[in-house]
Figure 1 (spheres, rainbow, N blue to C red):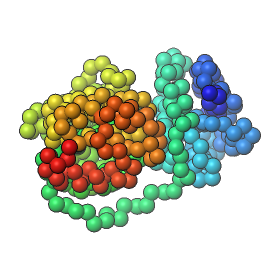
Figure 2: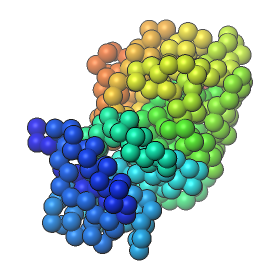
Figure 3: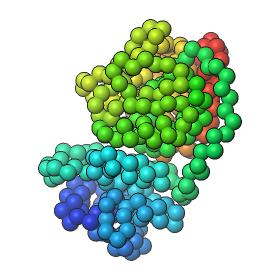
Figure 4: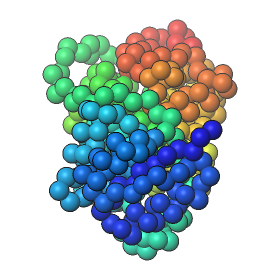
Amino acid sequence: MKPVRVLVVDDSATIRHLLSAILTRDPQIEVVGAAPDAATARQMIKDLNPDVITLDVEMPNMNGIDFLEKIMRLRPMPVVMVSTLTEQGAEVTLDALAIGAVDFFPKPTQNVGVSLDAAAGELTAKVKAAALAKLKPYSPRPAASAPECDERPCMDHVIAIGSSTGGVEALLEVLSHFPANCPPTVITQHMPAGFTSSFAKRLDRMCRPAVAEAREGAILTAGKVWLAPGAVAHLEVAGRGTYRCHLAADAAMSGHRPSVDRQFLSVSKSVGQKAIGVLLTGMGRDGAIGLKAMRDAGAATIGQDEATSVVYGMPRAAQELGAVARQLPLEKIGPEIVRLSRQPVSENV
């Protein structure tokens, strides 16, 4: 395989140097250039034709979001955003993912060199995954027009969803089909600490059900969606009959905390055949083992198909393991979840 050719764009000379040095260590990556601003980057994109861009959010003259929008409108290419771990940074990063950035990498604000070096593996993995991502030209998501939504009562199900790279937009697409009285739902999306609170608020604004970051002991009820807190704890479902959120702040599983596998395994034990498990786009294998456990316990299981996955890693692993009963394109997953949730459990398997 040819090395992934990367252009680093950041207004800080120190960050440009550090990111370039980290990426260059990986023999599968070649840093072909580094730009301090959007104008320079635009010309270097034309001259060097990189495979992936790492893009700083805050730059002079034209910020990273405006530049990203121009890239995704005129010449879609894989972009990994580099943003600070702040509430404002989280909001801007979510805007970038909505525009079409494949992924994001949190930029530390203290002990920058040491922190970046410690996260070198994460950065290189995201860049290499971005090079394989499926892209489409950016077009703004139309404002929610609140189309007619069937509010018939759902059956006694629990929905568990897992996602990673590409999951921000995928989750919004799936949840946009949920009625306000949807079955209780838990979601694990791979995100750093601090980002999931902003993401939950965004989903809450844009979807009919109420969405919030999960808290210990919260009861799972109809019309409520709980999102695992990023990097803080695994989100598990505990209890029998009356289910509640349990946050387990122990070691990572399948390379992640929160882990989709951990969530799915807890659902397979507590909910069994009354559950509906869904694995969306993402890098790696997290969720495959847990989804298989859910299917073995009698739950209905759905995997996103390759054609609509930004990165067909997690759904592929689940499909190959025999964990997926139904493989569907993204736009059909939300309606299928709602359909299944209105059927008796015995008909869903």
